[in-house]
Image (cartoon, rainbow, N blue to C red; front, side, top):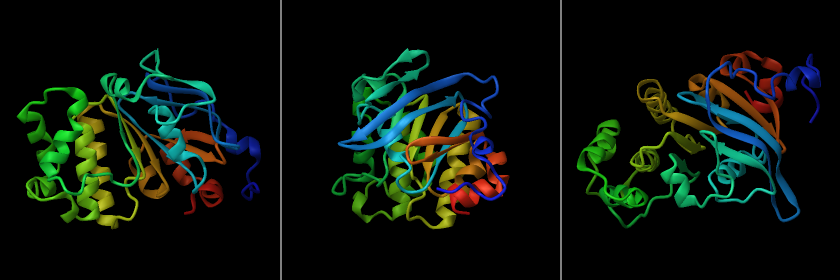
Length: 259
């Protein structure tokens, strides 16, 4: 890809090793992570930090490696190189169920619900890795998402796209994660629903100290709620910086973010 007008390669990669991170504590660190699908290298030495109590947005076009990054961090894809460190512990090769116990929850792209089960039953499925979950924890999810509370006895296939997204996020929250990995939560949703979901995520970060690693193609919406932005292109980090700084960089937005 050609460099955006008025910027040099050095300008765009400034801060790729950690600009915008300040002195905050990194709950999650990705160090030189590479991953491949057969001969195709999807990630090529990606490094980033997700700080405690903040939203880190990973942005880029289709094929940039965003979804592969989350799948590799959460253990669904095995890396060919690099490390994933959660709160100082190397979890690179930990099994997926161990990730949940260590405080990581992954909401993959696609709103994977079990269509034949009710909303309440879907939530119970999401709590299995945690063992016994109290009624108050289910009530907390319903308080966060009144729309799905109204439909708790309805089969999941009757929900709208936005309601399904609320359900899968609520299901992940039942695990009481320290860090939530969100993959394209805005995909196919109306702007009003996107704003509602992103607003709730921001609320959880601000009031409960949740940390979020957010993958999004809707860069404008993601940067409006994120603290830090990381731009990927062809499996590599192009730039890492404060979210507001990235949103204001017209050359970078046009070159990599599409707005």
